[in-house]
Length: 253
Image 1 (cartoon, rainbow, N blue to C red):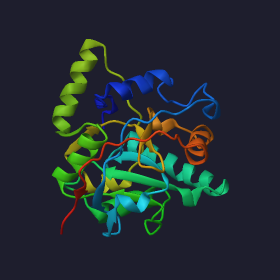
Image 2 (cartoon, rainbow, N blue to C red):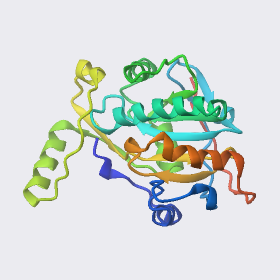
Image 3 (cartoon, one colour):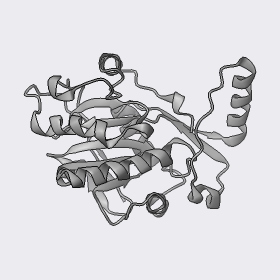
Image 4 (cartoon, rainbow, N blue to C red):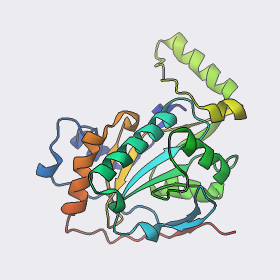
């Protein structure tokens, strides 16, 4: 995964990233700052890791921690998964688990399905039967509509050969930045001949379904930094609303 592919064209989100130190949650006291809203998260009906239909309306009233994961990833996605497990444990200790929903979208819906998603979650210490983390998939065009059209996050499937060529060109130009390597036994067993390049960001959606923060470098975010912001979204939601309604994306059998 090449996390530099990050694509968030919204000027407002770019301003959010700049205005909050990238919403890296560093050097900020969330309780003293008003968190702006930047549009509604997309509505959808998709399939989770258990093969169950999940409608986004089920998350109403909860803060959502949204991520975008490739189950055969060997760099950032496993690290993000590990952080999600840590964050969920911290939420439970803080008594907030029932008010927060972990939501991940599968950016490889064409070649991976619920069984693969379950295997990925198990590798990083999560029981897939626990629906507090919903790893969602569906028809490729539907996932594209939600992830790119709704959350404005770009992703693309590339061959390993073309990726290696790109990497060599970057090295020759002196602009190559090494990425971390994370163990992924699932990827080792499947041995795919492709990668899915996408971003490593985390999106926070408030209890009213509004996008409130984009956290970059989410693979490194600690529970201690994200919990104060989640508390603020739960305890002091903004009174101003977003009237825009988005067409629901539905996964049909």
